[in-house]
View 1: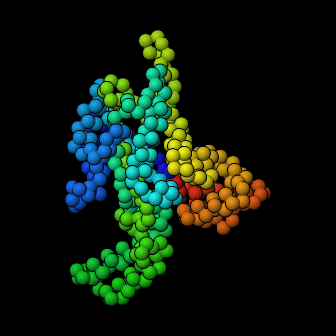
View 2: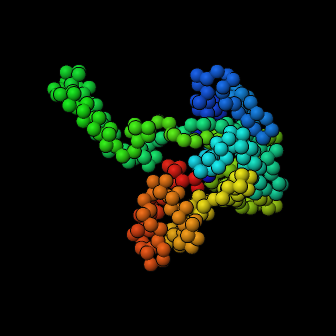
View 3: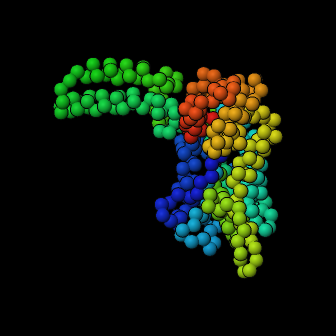
Length: 339
């Protein structure tokens, strides 16, 4: 499960509307008949139109300055294995989202308990994902893409009379490069913007910075760690516990759908890999043989070259460990592993 929380992006200020972000979320509805379009939902309602989502988020900004984000977005992106486990069922994803938002509310550190009833949000299911420049498969094709682009420029120059050359020969070279490119999908070279195959359902959530009463600020921003401050001579709790949220989000999915999560799929594993790579691989060593083999298969599917997982600590050579960490890190960045 990959979950990301990001704040509203509008350059140096945040005075703008939620319209642009909602418009982005409407991209899969373009060209579809009204009855075939995917609408927004919240904790209690389905089939909410985009204009209502915009209006309610935009109106809920009392006392926020132009330097304050007006909303945050949460992307919930299950892995292929998780989607397969729930049959890529959109209703189950919506059920999970509603449970997830309960854990989101509970992760705020306040003197008064925050519940999901305090949260103003709208969520939307998307069924497609496309490759970006950050994806491992796109990067592995980059050298071929650059050569193909150079040849295409030569062909254009010849056709425009700026250069001389054999267009047929250059086109043949392009075809050879297309064939030689290492990463393909359905016989075609993978490029940025190409739709990914397989189950790709995910959820986008737009959540207001203010609570439903438009009176209390509820920011999950990275600068708002759990802490206490003095206000009017009294200690006041503030902040958002992201670590608690991510761990609870994972447990919620596993409990709700009976999912057996391998070590390399866990939030704990990702944290360990970032902060203490050696302990990550020591933990990997300590797995039962069947789970260690399953971990190897998950890493292999994500494009991480793991010919063998070390069977003893002596094999955890620093150089080899760092090389493997780099490969796993790239897989995480591109969303290939559902941690």
